[in-house]
Amino acid sequence: MSELGLLSYVDLFVHFMNAGGVVMWVLFGLNLFLWYGLGYRYLVLQRGTLGNVRRQISKHIERGDAQKMRGMLDYAIVDALEASNEAKKINKKCRYYVHDALFPYLMSIGKYSILIKTIVVLAPLIGLLGTVMGMIETFDALQSSSMFAQGDSISGGISKALFTTELGLVVAVPGLILGKILDKKENQFALEFEQMTDIICTKEEDEIQQS
Image (spheres, helix red, strand yellow):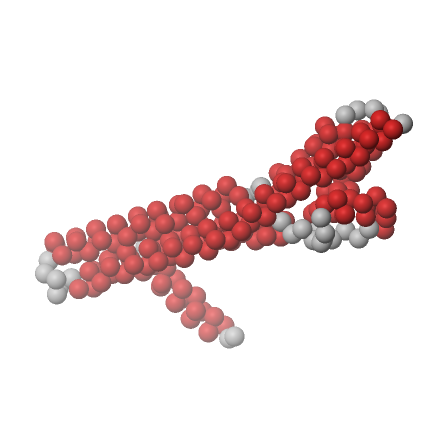
């Protein structure tokens, strides 16, 4: 693409944004933050490995360092097993150490969740604000002079109202759908971490009782 063609697209984009007023730029900024948060959560919430938690724990115990690390679940299992071994060496309660080892993962899977939910709620409201501003501009044009003399102002106000409403929905709807999908994956990880703690610590408690 030539530099001239790129500049024409930029000018077209700026013209479109300015048609909706300052609210359009606010919505555009929210959209950037939204997709950054969604992208981050998508990359973090990659399980990376197949099979249930119990099977993966058994593989890591049997193979040790030879087990290939494919995603968050593998790293969490390794850290949980190391915490369990450390607790066993100093004769401390396993669950406390495993919970501490998994806490950074719990924080990581929930990062930007509140940001996404906030933007999904705010975007339609800000779009509605732009709609109100556009309608006020339209009625001001009708009040100040005749409809034909103020045709540009009237059409500009209506365009601003429609543009901001549209962009508000464009930001909110994908964020709502993708956010729900990622929240479901987050809940699945949280359950697997609890299951991981139960499996590892129950195994350690059984070994202590047998010895």
